[in-house]
Image 1 (cartoon, one colour):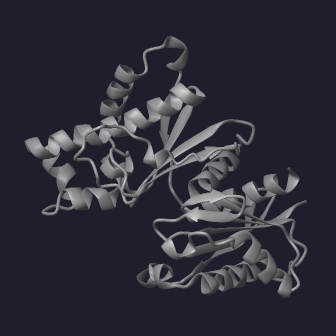
Image 2 (cartoon, helix red, strand yellow):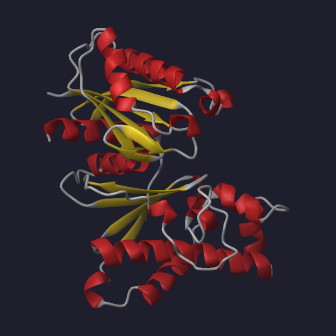
Length: 298
């Protein structure tokens, strides 16, 4: 039975030992306190690699014969290299898989390391949790930014959070600097930049009360998600889309479905659905491990 370690890297590091696609023992976190969870932004690449090594070793415990190690992190990932990482810019260009493999080998652990986009890892975790490892899984993570996860692995970039959903020249709030991106409308950071006088929570509350500006934005927010989802359907077919992240609280499912019906008109493509799922680190860690297991078998 394969023994794997899954690791995710976002605001902080989460790691755990995974056997038979289930966690064995508790998750480990670094930093341990939520108050320090943005410390990784200031951490040099070499120190991040050492931290990943230490968390993998601690999660594995006495188990040295690991089948694979999977690391999920936000950004554009290709062949074990972080090609772009807006949220952790110091990692751009870093060969994390190669560096972590060498760091583990120095400690007597010889295991292939696989690097995956964190949203793709989350999609794999959802597949494992729902017993659907033979199915296409797509997930939108709606938080500080917008993530698009896809399982199983397929060659491509899959930066769905940067899907262009409008040609409005004023839509320049995406963190990458691009115009008209879904993240530039729906992302928490982008919403705060748009409404300098209101927090996102206040915007959606005001929309409920009938404030015209906020209600228009609520509609735009749902149109953006519908447009990005419709693009995915028109490219890769219908099916279930999972929705997760701390800002799914703003979702009006009836409004989203109404816009979807306006955008997806071909009857063979209308067999789609949505399901809100909890975004928890356990699922992400399992997903990173599942991706590593599949990568090792290819």
